[in-house]
Length: 348
Image (cartoon, rainbow, N blue to C red; front, side):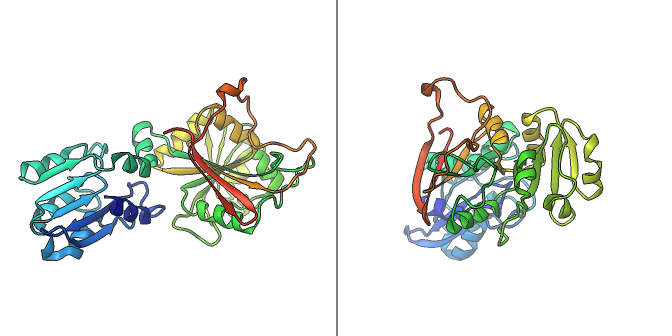
């Protein structure tokens, strides 16, 4: 199962809004016969690749898969049909699939056909692997990543707003890799004015994220990179005041009226966006933090000091007592060039 989970990781960024799935087939003697993973949205599922690789060696053998095999006709035929046709005798599954068209149905079909089924092998790891998929199903909201770079004294810019560059080349490369796995990248209006960002992944990654601006007032620059490239890469502006943004709409941006940040997330979920990345600034990050909307954190700390009154990473209201501070779980710390990359999660 751990091998199947490692295989599933190969689909990250390519399969969403589907889950990442890996599969391993053992022959009747317990020897490796085939393996595979779900490689792209709309393509064959992991079981199909693994069974095809195993061929006749699958008959009487065992299928180990990270998620319950599907039992419905979607973009591909039901995987339960492939499992039964291959003559698999035993199936080990990490977790059931809560997707309404599956939801235990695949397991029931296999058991009814006489296949021995075991569920729950490395289940916690499988849940963690597909947390974004599960959250989208459960809440209708995407998994929210937050990213920022800051100095040792916690500044994301100097007192005059200069921020290029806090982090080094290795950290910026990692950020572009992260962008290439996202469905959308979000910034606030202040970031558009201060940095004039392009918000693309360079080089291109598995996905082409939509560039999103959240602006309550609708006040945005008349000329900037996002507006100039809106016909090339999607730009969505969420605002409570669409009137000033007619020019942006004329230039190809989609302007959506929303009352608050939760409504933004609800709309992104309705678009089946699975992973979204908030890149700044402090106001938008702070609002998301105050709302408890951030699921995963990516923080780059540079060995630099600027002092003064420059902005910190999180605005908003924040917590009043240190005892109420958010303590990240499953945190990792690693060098990123001269910087340190801290990666952690808001909850188990």
